[in-house]
Length: 223
Image (cartoon, rainbow, N blue to C red; front, side, top):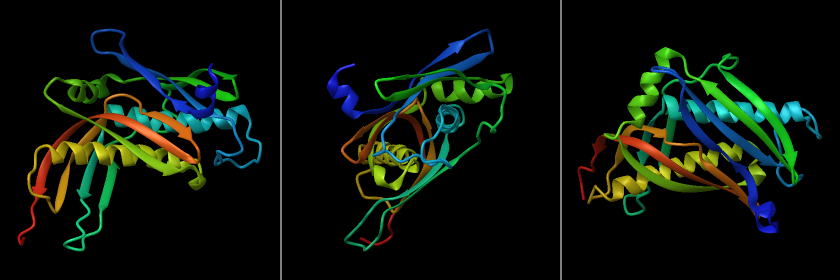
């Protein structure tokens, strides 16, 4: 691994959806995090064990895979300084893989160049495949976005960076289709693939590709 990649790589989640049978699908990805005192982890010990780090990444994979299968509902109010309106964004899971689901497994872990890797998979139950296939259909629009957060906020900053990237994907999608700035946008969004999450300086940067729907646009009634 080059020096440049050692300096910036925190987590690159590479996943694929594999069809096992007519109705059986599983997701698999490699999730990683740089082992560095500059990147605080939310564990009960100053020097977390490999098992504790793997558990953190398993929880991250659970959230990401849930976002790929079920998606989220969102509400977005763009910043409008003229109207003195502050930006607001909420992202709520439509459903989640339950913790302890036997289909969610860590297949392998290893450490290389001060980076901890976990190969994680999730086998979808038959009743869940329709969620995933619906988002993957050609009829759903796509959009990409990037988000930045301070790593000083701790491990949760990783998730916040992804949420910020999703917000930017929604914002860019709406800007290309709505001439007048809306008051509020609502709809649904799903991760098309696991985010690319990197660390540089003291910030996390997330890049996402999303599937999304824009279900309601609430306009301003005056100017």
